[in-house]
Length: 409
Image 1: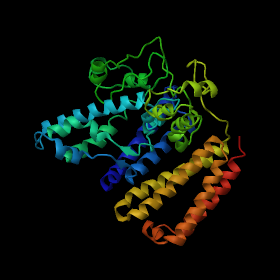
Image 2: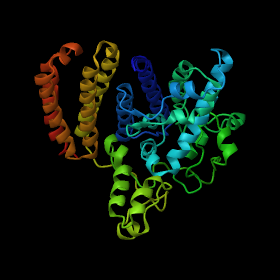
Image 3: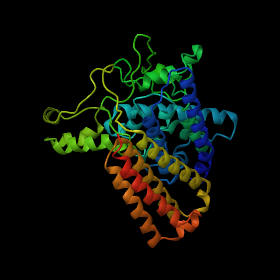
Image 4: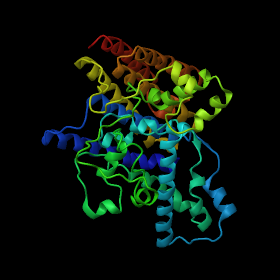
């Protein structure tokens, strides 16, 4: 986790700079692909994801080292060939994991946030899940385990493979000629994020496009079918917590209302969007019918709310970056407590973007949280090197600013 946190010290600023460059380019060519609150929602989803991953908040069903130690039929040395084989194996596993996420109800819950933005830009690449709390991807790396690819190679290439999926989340790059037959490109990934009937569940590859062509999930971007982005059952919120677990909540409600016990169980493992017939008949759930006429989520807000939200966002990002800079110096309990503080900050201002009264609740909860830490674990502030008075003072001011901003439309 320490190495992951150190990598984020470089990755986060790099991603931010690239997002800002795309914003500037869109402004320069008068073809802007960003909206203020949607962009902050994307960046904030990235914040919650890196917090969750750096704190190790997941249950691993089976680890790659264990699988490799039991099943390897040979052992690959640390050579260039090994690194190439490992990267291909990771990408192959990524394709099937991605395909599961699009086709099975319970797995869609861990991926829906990545598709929840109704814009398509570099920022939406950072919409990553916090609901993927059960680790099973080692099973999909079975080919690498059988070949005896060292875990050290997988551990290095895994994050690089993920970071390599960032660049193609853009509308400013057209088709790339012969590269379209080898790599996943912006054109192909625009198709993947689109909700047009022609494009749904297509182009599931992550780095190499050959898997889609091989397994029948490839779809070219068509000039006569301009992509529209989002999900067919829109989240209608900027709060990453609600987006992450909204599908899970809907599945739970449907399972509760289902009359047949077998439907209560199988709903989780049926194709994405499947609902028991009796539940669908009694409880209608709106779905986008015409992708070209639906209204994107864009709640009214005034300048004051935008200013308050942006300041709160900057404070959260600053604390996150500082947190990763001193990550190796903190104990596990201190990491968890600071992570919880940043999470509450994100919940507060993203709820404020919705104009929701939950914003005030999260802000008040943050003040209570800081008081409880001070009473139960005061050494965390010494470990952070930040005065308690500063943190509690900023939080109190944030409560007042949030209350004021909620009235601004």
